[in-house]
Image (cartoon, rainbow, N blue to C red; front, side, top):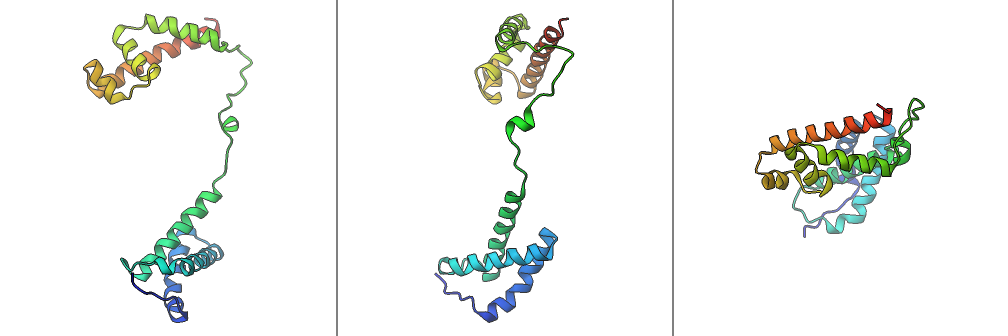
Length: 166
């Protein structure tokens, strides 16, 4: 392990570089200064583990980069799944209940052309990954993608028609 010290001279030398790096990435002077301060705190706490495999400057910038990433993670808005994925109310039609939808999907799945049915069953029902499904079916991944698209589109059309009472 290399012995490195964080003294006043090192701080004076490195601070402008760290501030410039932070300002460019966050765009606000106050936030950049806070992030650099957090970097110094982390550096003082971890200087004993600095192995010297990189320069001190590189090590400090890597700490700062992690602080910036952490700040962005904390500032991301948190959306509840239900909030984000709740379907809009549709007063024009009633939705099928789950059991009726499953019965319809099963009946329509059996009515699909053989290769489309096989593709949908392997990937969507059994959860086989696409590469393995293509191998089992003896087709290219692109051909499998086409069969999945067609099969899913037919099932979707049938479900939508049933929901609309068509």
